[in-house]
Length: 271
Image 1 (spheres, rainbow, N blue to C red):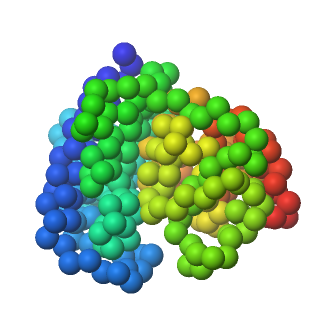
Image 2 (cartoon, rainbow, N blue to C red):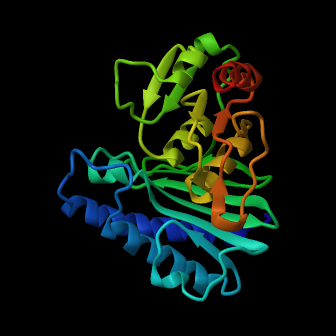
Image 3 (cartoon, rainbow, N blue to C red):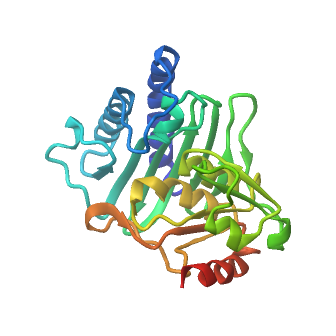
C-alpha cells in the first residue's frame, strides 16, 4: 500500500500524543467558560511528542503545526513532503472536559493529502484514511472497519453538524440556509469531519472567514476517502501547504449526494 510507512507513523504519533493528553485531561480542572482561543500546556506537550516522532521517522520533511514549540525550530514549514498537525483540535472541549477534542495528523505529498488521522482520546475513537486506500475506523472497542458516508439525498432529511452555538435557541445563518432535519453540535473540526466520514451525520458547514490547514487537512481526507466531497463554500478546491497555512473559503463537507443542493442554499446566504 502506498504511504503505508507514513500512515503507521501518523497513527503512532497520534496515539502517543493521545495518551499524554488523556493523562493531563484526568488531572485538569475544568474551565466552564473557556474562550475560543484557549491553549493549554497539554497542547504544547502533545505537539512536541508528535513532531519529534515525525522528525525522527522522516528527518527531511517539512512540518506545519498550530503551536509554536521547539520542535519547529530550524524546520521548514512548507515543502513537497509536509506534515500538518493540530495536537488538540477543540481545545475548548478539552478545557471544559466534555470530551469533544481530537488529535489531527495529516501528511501532504506534492499538494495532495495522502494520509489523515483523527484520534478522539476521550472517546477512544480513531478514524484514518490513506489516499486511494479508503477511510477506516478503529475504536478501542472493536476491529478496524471501513467507513462510508451516508446515503441521504435530500437536505430536508439531513443531519448537520456545527460548532456549539452562542445562542442555542437561535438557528445559525448556515442552519437557516440548509434547513436540515436535525443539528448536532460539537467542538473540534476533526470530530465533525470524522462524523461525516463515518456516515453519522450528512454534512458539516464552516463559515469562518479564515482558518488554517491544521484545522481541516486530516479530516478532509477522511471524508473524500469515505466517498464524500469537501470544498469551499462556493465550491472552491481547497489547497494545502501555501504560505501561512491559511484557508479563506470556508468549508462544506458532505456525503456528496447533497453537496450541490447545500452549495446553492449557502450561496443565497453568502451573496
